[in-house]
Figure 1: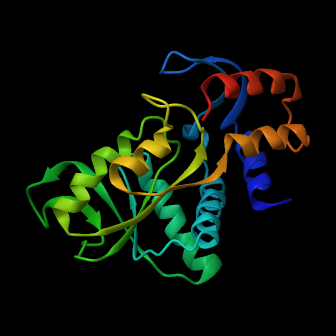
Figure 2 (figure 1 turned 180 degrees about the vertical axis):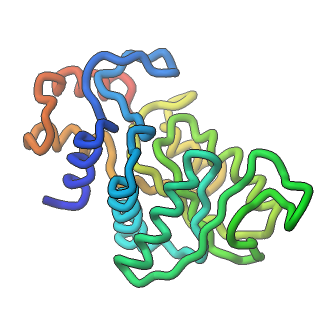
Length: 216
């Protein structure tokens, strides 16, 4: 089993990837749903970090620091930075932002590594729907220092049309020049259902229809 197949099974086992009939925030009716809030235990986060580390390592994304947008990105970045060290011997820093700047103590908008000019930063997040996390993070990061955003890593690329004909991932590349890497894509999930790596064959037809209607 590849690490991508293993990750899809892991999502299903954790109750993060489920199949059924769901209405998304966009109003679209989808046959699958991804809820990253269902990663709840230490062992799950440790394993999740390893998958992020695998994706970073496989794609050779240069990094001095992993940045986790508050709040959901914080444990993701922490788990990934630990896994990079433990699994690959790559010792990177991490930081995350505050929702409001701190006006006492060390102050500032960030916790963790103090960013410097030229520093290579990877943004770590869960699932990209509209690209909002990156759009909000970029000005904060650039205001702190002239950092080099070498990529963004998410768990699943839904490969769906965003506001136009491009996907959110493609829009981010167009607007900011940032490449978004995903541990898996919706195509990988469909393939895993076909290969019976995970249950859900009864939803395969609906998955393909949804992909045909909204996919890029």
